[in-house]
Length: 113
Image 1: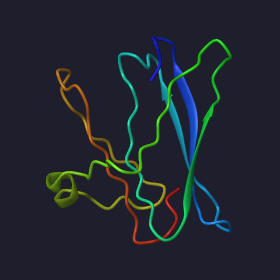
Image 2 (image 1 turned 135 degrees about the vertical axis):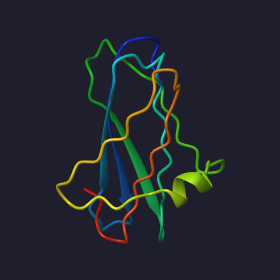
Image 3 (image 1 turned 180 degrees about the vertical axis):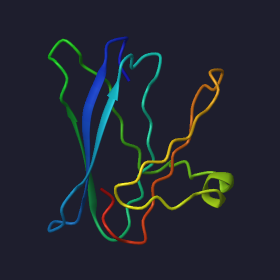
């Protein structure tokens, strides 16, 4: 989260010493109003999460990684997931009063690009 300025970050999950990292780019216009939260599954062995602030020097942000108190995706989210083929786009519209959304991205073990 930030105290108002944009949040611009690269997040990487490193699976063990020899694997390519799973990368996520995050940009939020106002990190105080819309803080970013994510649950990232970490299967198999040792893992490392790297967070890089790629914003300007004037835009610091606060970050925390908590491995003990992880919130699981809701049963509704798990039950209603749909397959999106490579190169395809699927949109999910929602009404303006919605405060937050839950997003689940999962593969059958292949890389998530």
